[in-house]
Amino acid sequence: MALPGQATMASRFAPLLALSPLVVWLDQWTKVLVVRQMVLYQSHDLLPGWFAFTYIQNRGAVFGILAGHNQWWRLPLFLGLAAVAVVLLALYYAHSRPEQTLLRNALALVLGGAIGNVIDRIRLGYVIDFLDCSWHGHHWPAFNLADAAITTGIGLMLLDGLLEGRRHKETA
Image (cartoon, rainbow, N blue to C red; front, side, top):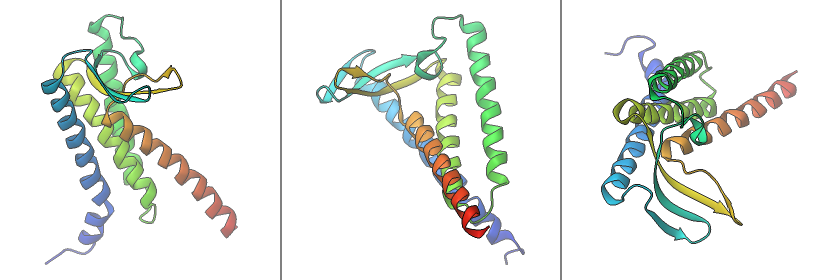
């Protein structure tokens, strides 16, 4: 017998409990495949001049920022910032309204991506990147599925904010 509000609680946190672990699992699984199948800096062109799998160990932050600095302060800084981000995302999710499905899915993507990269930093001291994109000779820094989930989630959060603004204008 379900307690009052129990089904609501389960459905409220369904995206967080389903999507975030799926992102973490896919991210970690693809990184294991890359490490098992490739050597560091090895690259496989899938769409020459556009897209490749390239095995990189990112010891820095986003786009390798701070990679050349000492590990003794860099790793605690990255882990501390990630912990704060995870807590803030979870709080933001907990305070979202039930009808904010897009926002909840977006937050679940960002949270899953953040956790995926934190696992790498704790386990390895760096993040495994392998998705390598170029466009007309312009190269984008390599990234991974966790980064893609974070970026997609942030994009969806921005879209939700725009849609929320429109909804408020329409009801005003």
